[in-house]
Structures are given as C-alpha cells and as structure tokens.
Amino acid sequence: MNSPRTIGVGLISVGWMGQLHSRAYSALPVMYPELGIKPRLVVAADTNPERAQYAVDVLGYERGVTDYHEVLTDPEVEVVSICAPNFLHAEIGAAAAAAGKAFWIEKPVGRSADETQAVVDAADAAGVATAVGFNYRNAPAIEYARKIIAEGKLGRINNVRGAFFADYSAEPNGALSWRFIRNLAGSGVLGDLLGHLTDLAHYVVGPIDSVAATTKTVYAERPKLPMGQATHFAVVENGEMAPVENEDYAGLLVRFGPDAVGAGAVGTLEASRVTVGPRAEYSLEVYGTEGSLRWNFERMNELELALGYDGPHVGFTRVMAGPDFGDFSHFQPGAGTSMGYDDFKVVEAKKFLLSFVGQDSAHADVHDALAANRVVYAGEQAAASRAWVDVEQVAGTTAARNTSAVPSAAGASA
Image (cartoon, rainbow, N blue to C red; front, side, top):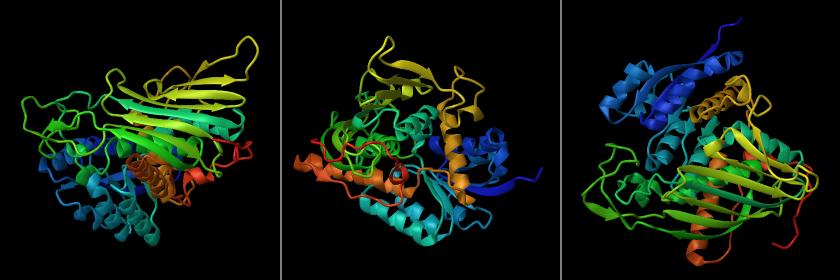
C-alpha cells in the first residue's frame, strides 16, 4: 500500500465552525482510507490567544498564532479553512487566493454580491481550488433526491417549497452578536439561512432566475455582546440594548430558469431565525407531474418519497437513508443507523481535498456561493421595491452542471 499524501492544513478562527472543520480533517483518513489523503494540522490562528492554544492542545495543530497572515505565509500550509465572522470572509478569502492557498470558506463568502464577486475573481485569477460550507447538500438523502430528480423519476418539476426555520434567536434577550449588525454580517437571515436554502434549491432543482420578496425584523433591539465572548445562542439579561440592523424573517417567491432540471418551475423559499417551535427545521419539498419528495434536516436520515398517483400505496412513503444514498456507506453499515451533522462536514472536507488534488468532486465552490448571494441580493432589492427582480446568473456552478433530458415546463404560465 502506498503512503498517503499528506496535505498541510491551516485554520483561521478557532470557534465552533473552526473546530468542526478540524474534526472533519482528522476524521477523513478514517472514513475515506481509499483516497490516500492524510491532512496534517499545521497552524491555527485566532485573535484570542486561549483559542489559539486550544487548537494546539485539543485539536492537534502543531502551532497556534494570533495573526491569520502567519497561516497564509507558512510554506507548509497548502489548504486553509476560513471560519472567521462574515465581515472578514472577503478580506481573508482574497488574501488566501493571493497567497496561492486553496481555501474552504464558510458562507456567506461576502456580505454582498460585490464582495463575493471579488473573492471569485481572486480565486479564479490565482487558479486555486475552493470550497464553500453549504453542508446541507452533502446529506445522503439530498444526494439521492438530486439523483432521482435528474433521472426524471418525478417527471416535470412544477413547484418547490423550502423553509429554513430556526429558533436560535427566538429569545428576545438573545445577544446582539455580529450576526445582527449590517456592516459585520451584511443581511440577516437572508444571507445566513436563506443562502443555505438557495444553494440547496440550486443543487437539487437548478438555478433560480427571478424573485419577489418580503422581509421583517421581529425584534428591533437586542442586548449588546462583546465580540468573541460567546456565540449567537447567548442570552443577556438586563444588558444595554442596541438596534438590530437586518431582517429576522425573509420570504421569496422564485422562478427557476431555463437551465434548471426544474426549468419553468415556481416556488417559495422562507427563512426565519426567530421561530418558536421549530429548532432547526430546514426542509425542502419538490413536486413533479409523476412524483414528489420532501426532506427535513431535523430528520436528516429520512426522505419522504411519492411516486405515481394511483394504486393502493399512493402518497408519501418514508425511505431511510442507506448505502444507496450518497456517501452513507462510508459512515454507517446500513439503513436505520443514522449519520450526524459532523459527518456532513467530513463529506465536505473530502470533496474539497479531492478538488485540491485535481479530481472533480461536484462540490460547492465560490461560484456556487456567488450564485446564492445573487439570489439574496435580488431578494433584498425585491423586498425594497415590492417588484419581481431578475437574478444575474453565474457560470461554472454545480447547479449549472445539474442538467438532464427531463421534460421542461419552460414557457408555461407562472
């Protein structure tokens, strides 16, 4: 057996997501021994010295530093994970590209379409591999859903319904973290959750080409939270209040473009961070002329599937994820033994590192991030104007490659 290829890894920001990336790298050789890839955790950067030291003591990095530039200038670092707050993504992403480092960056890549475009341009100019943390597309049930839609099992796609409803900000005294401040986060739930949902719709059904939208800020003020002291789940009692600068809820009406598997389909996409009831109810439903399917992250190892419209078994049937679903067999031996959220990130790490070594892994990259961001940007414009807005399309995305000979509804009335 040949020795595995070692790939030097750098990490920027050792928060929850940075720790998750690190665990994914460490698990990859165990889950995918056949790839012959072994990540080496070289250096981690965080402005908080205690977190930088945690990366060494607990996560297994060889060094911890407080300046992210030391990660990008380290000659032993080949790939970089960028897990810093949103307002730093564009700066660090462009810097990583300029340093010739492949990078895996969390969404949104930029606070605006312009910032995201700048990172895409830098990565394309440098010719570096990129990946974006659209982890929900890595759920085996989603991979299977995408496959059967592309094969035409649902017939012509008529309509799509997606809802990413979470309660992480339902508490009125939930802390005013950077996520609620426009110059730090950009948009609110549009960029945070609806960006994820848009990518999921792009990946499974195809590109969205126009939107109408509405948004709402439910809590106008929240108690302040100093940067880096806690997560956006923190609750602050009797704190100093400050304005919330972006939206808590967003709803889009969407039309899918002519290049989509679901060409001509229409749908609704909603997202909220202040729901009471749903904890992380991230769902996607696709309805066609021959069948339908629906998936919910809270039951991530299940797919509800309906094929045909007559006979004694018409209606949805619960199908458990198993070895025929995406990468499931790399984690569990059979249906009924479930995968978890962290496993999706291991799949993501695999796809990223395969792209780094020159293999096509159909993973989300910065072009997919730009496509999702342009839908978000169009949604902001549509909400302000109360009119339909066309979405500028992006070449080279996974969604653009998700084509088949499935009958199209293009030209039908919306």
